[in-house]
Image 1 (spheres, helix red, strand yellow):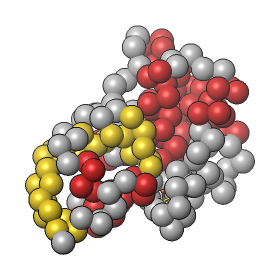
Image 2 (cartoon, protein in one colour; image 1 turned 90 degrees about the horizontal axis):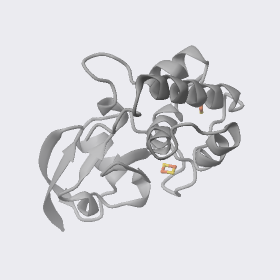
Image 3 (cartoon, protein in one colour; image 1 turned 45 degrees about the vertical axis):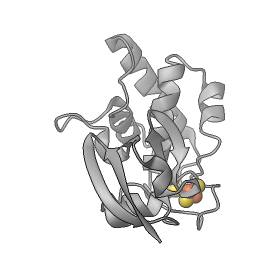
Length: 166
Ligand code: FES
Ligand code: FES
């Protein structure tokens, strides 16, 4: 069984006929070809690699059906940079060695972006707690925490934290 849905992803409206059982992560990756969002735990909801934002809130896209996003706004990692300029979180992950293989990175950043909008000046403990649902098998987390902290400082110095893409 299929259904037509209309989802705005990174500011673009997509109207697609999809199987009603299609997961949002597979819609994003396989239908829209936005492969920055990853699938890392065979749809068990434990790794966080598939994290995107739904109406500005971080969600695990393997835990949702695409039809549940009908009429909603989705932001993926591809929607974070502006006019070719990296988001402060993207820049900070690069500068503070917040990634090695990069598999977890898009999910980490989409989660951290929402977190910094709600807590613009977090402590290290608060950052670690916020990212508890995002697993990294490479970095040991030190660089990730340093990156989120540095991005928070940069965004606070610049004024209000950058808003989610759409
Ligand atoms: S793929 Fe969604 S949490 Fe792992
Ligand atoms: S950088 Fe490899 S899983 Fe996090």
